[in-house]
Length: 220
Image 1: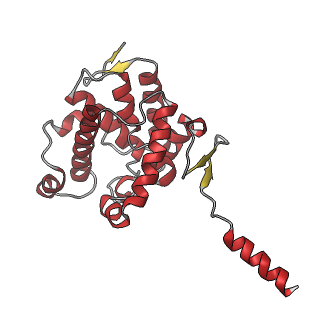
Image 2: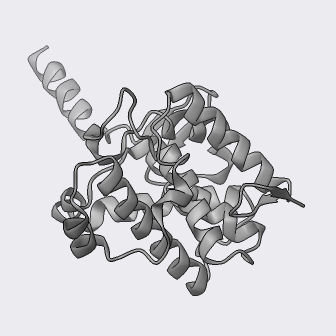
Image 3: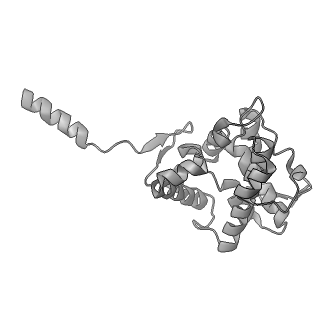
């Protein structure tokens, strides 16, 4: 009997840890080998609206969610380059989409963890992009625009919401080339329900080929 119990304990120890998460849609996403078939935009919108930027260290009665950050980045990118097409806009909106399942980590902690987090994040992002008919790796020009827009978004968020001085934010994120007042709506923390609805609506507008110019007017 003792031998059987030892074998049972050993077999449990040898069993690989669970590497998937069940979504509210019923999908089961494998974090180590994600399939585009297990990606649903409703799950992404639901998750991103509940993940706080800046570890929740922002002003106001609501968190500033990754869903709102994604909307901000897409609008900044379109302001910097109004000619960007549907795939580029969709990439901007989805650039942080893996965080719907792995969460958002502040940059200093990501640097501490090293490449393991980044590898998982990149695999999930590639599956998401393939799910929505985008290249698994963006073109260099699109990647550069996304990074530029992301850093500007971080600057605006840091100063408006996270308690940074402008001087401190400029030192960390660089000085933005466009004014913050263009993004007042995107920088106002909103309820989880509102953030989720706005993210999902924006995804559907872009995915259906209807874009929005920087003044807020929809265009075919």
